[in-house]
Length: 159
Image (cartoon, rainbow, N blue to C red; front, side):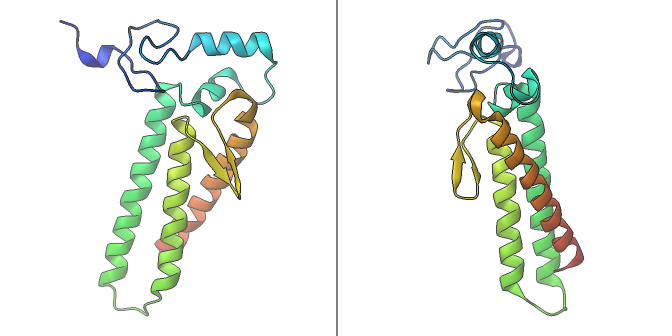
């Protein structure tokens, strides 16, 4: 009997699929090589590489793992910062700490959404995971990483 981890999962419906298939038998949506072939036939690459486009649409397993690792690390850091903040005897400014924590967790969610093919948010605009939005989604990812670094620095310094 084959081990379950040898079979990939559809990035759209999370059903198990047979390796090297072009589309999911459950939901019928294309993934992997078929998406790249359609992209190359319909429109030229306008931003980044084909692999980056797959990461942006949540179709790259390595990209999903990295996204989960970043979110897990940031969430653990925020929880640790709150523990240190709650036990410290310094001046308490809970509103600033709450605002920075909320922004950091939103950035973590947006990074997760980018690597898992979910809709991302830049300001008031929402960008779905499709090929024409790869550029906007990537600029939003860069903004999220910068904001996340600023929030982590503020939490590390104790606000």
